[in-house]
Length: 125
Image (tube, rainbow, N blue to C red; front, side, top):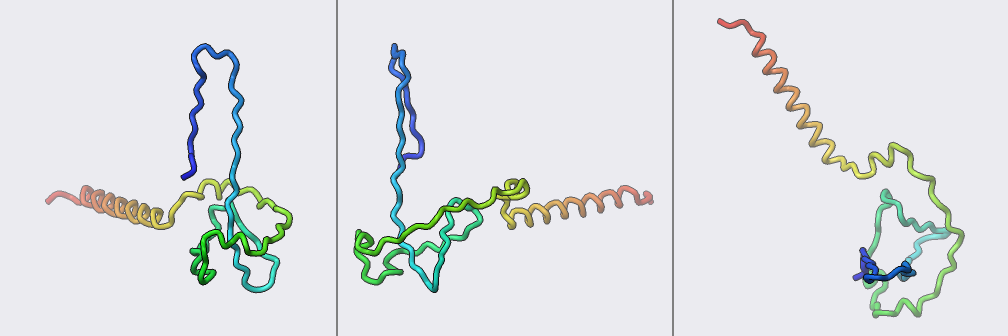
């Protein structure tokens, strides 16, 4: 399991700051092409839907490390997507189901408030 957090501490009495270096090990990916190219791989986009499948279901009889014998693809130019708008940043973590539940709750509270207000306005008999 890769480490998510690292902590660096200086030894007591050390006057020089340490030199830190971090590297990233790339992940191997098996890409199954259907139809004619060119193909687009999307990464880092929270709106992109995943179609990840186990390699054994894509390649029958798959053996571990067998992808090393597969032909290597040539990667074209990497193009950056346009930056998200302010509205997309605000609504990035909004779940539609939660919005609907909150709307129902607020409508219910409003209906109860109207009913209480109308009951208070009725003349006492």
